[in-house]
Image (spheres, rainbow, N blue to C red):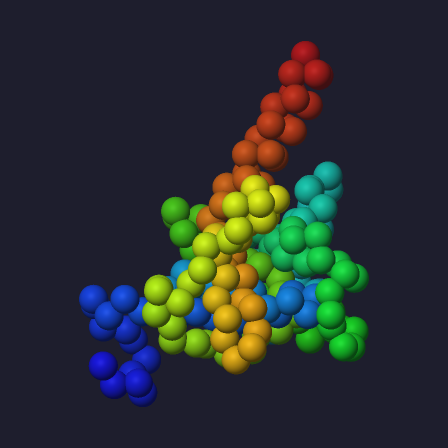
Length: 175
């Protein structure tokens, strides 16, 4: 397969992984899940009262309101990472993804690049780490950096489930 093509050919056992940065940590996601990458504009965020701490608010995307999840809060990385300089809010990036007919924006510190890798290069997480970090499915070492592979579908599904439980408890307590 030619290395200069943008799209992957079927049956190559490869994927394109977007490497992004959250509080100094390299994290990756399959490019096929990304709808768009855009500059974060904090003035366009609508805060949602009583939302989970991971939810920065909502954004208007293609005439639809979608949630914006701050991945530094989701991964409990705020202030714990290896970042060399403070990232200003308007320098951050939104990754808009769609899976299972749900569109969600994820707030990250920056995007490094897209890597074409073989599925064989992805290592599963150690079982202990997998139990503690269900948001990650594995990792890959590229150019001396360990890139954690994020399970974005699980992140969204767990936020939805926890919110449904919270709202259900509040409704039941009112009656």
